[in-house]
Every structure is written in structure tokens, then in C-alpha cells.
Length: 281
Image 1 (tube, rainbow, N blue to C red):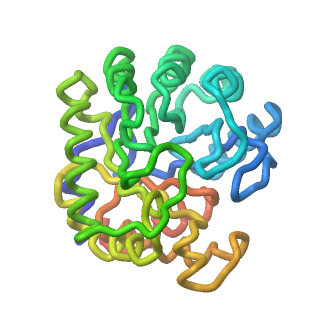
Image 2: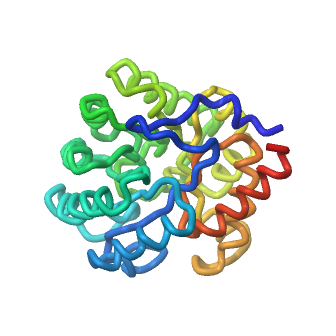
């Protein structure tokens, strides 16, 4: 039986989630690695939200800054891209869990005030005030492991003595810090952050040993959709990584992951249903 049942129930901002929750990505960026800006315009982003909610997404994760290197996006521009969209989605889809991918405390405060339930701190505490913002507003918080990188940097010859041990040390420390600051335990998620500050070998090792993270009792988020380690493993460009992504997601679900951040909400929902049936629950 997968170890997902060992994870604490997840209720960001008091909103209950299923034990395996689909987090759909909607980026308001003109330079997204996956869709090349297809959802950058406000109406296009709102339509994309409608589509993923209809496809079965439990969480919508809105981002206003490309994860990798690219044009400089200051806090004011990031707020412009995400705050109004969060407010519109909150009104349009009152039942969905709304997440925003940001590392900035000032952006976190703005989106929480606009209706966000979860702050997805992909860069793992780069702004130490962000966890305090989550505590102040009662939102959930994703505690991630970006290695030693600062936001939007790419790894170069990254090395770990034991990548999983390093991940555990970082994310558990961030989770306990968030808890001490007052972030509700049921809103805290840990994320090994595949490919962030890591090479393909590291990301594969994390996937193989994901049970060590899920065994901590904290809900685990996996964000592997169409990532470079999938492409490099299978020698596939970004638009042909779907089957590899699904395989990694299924393995992660079997090993106990709780949240799956993806571009294909409908396909992921079907894959998770298959895992549920195999698990007998």
C-alpha cells in the first residue's frame, strides 16, 4: 500500500484536499518554458483556469515569473500579473484551492489579501519574510529545496554527498520554521524541487527515494511535469515528455506523494485514478 495515508491531512487556508491532489499550472508569463506565453494575456489565463478546473484540478497554481533565467521581473510587475487574476479566479471558482508561485513576501501578502490559499515558495525561503506572511494571513506554504541557488539561477556542476539527505535537511527545517512562525500544520507541504539546483541524476535519485520524504509525515508535492530530467532521460523535447511525466507521477503517487503540479490536469487525474485502484483505495 502506498504511504500517502501517513501524510497529515492537507487543508491550506482551511480548504480540504483529497489525499492525492492535482495542482494545475497557469502561468501569466510571456516566456514560459512550456507554453511560450500562451496564457500570458489576462483573458487567456482566466480561460486556462476554467479549463483546468473543469478537467479536475484541485489546486490552481498561478505564476507571474518564469522559473529560469529571462527578463527581469520586479515585484511591482509580478503583482500586476498575478493579483488581479487571483481575485478574478477566487470570485469565479470559490471552491478551488488557489496557489501562487512566488518567493517574494510582498507579492505573497498581496495575493493572500486577494484570495490565495497557498503560497508556493519554489525557491525555499529566499525571502525569509515569506513564511511570516503565510502565518499572518493563514495561508498554506510549500517549503521547497532549490539547492544553493538564488531565484531564477540555473545549476552549474552541482554536487551533493547525498541529495536526498540534503533535501530532507532543508525542507524539514523550513517546515518546522514555518510551523513555529504560526503557519497551520495542515497547510504546510514539502517539495524536493526536481531539477532546481539539481541535475538529472539527482532528480532521478529523489524520485527513486521519494518514500524517505513521504515517510516524514509531511505532505509531499512533486513538480516534475515536462521537466528537463524527463527529457534528458528519454531524449525528448519539451512537447514530447508527456508519457515520461506520467510515469514519474505514477511512481511518485505510489511512493506516497500528496500533490502533483502538472500541465495536463485531465491526464494526471486519470493516472492517479489508476494508482488509487491499484492501491485498493
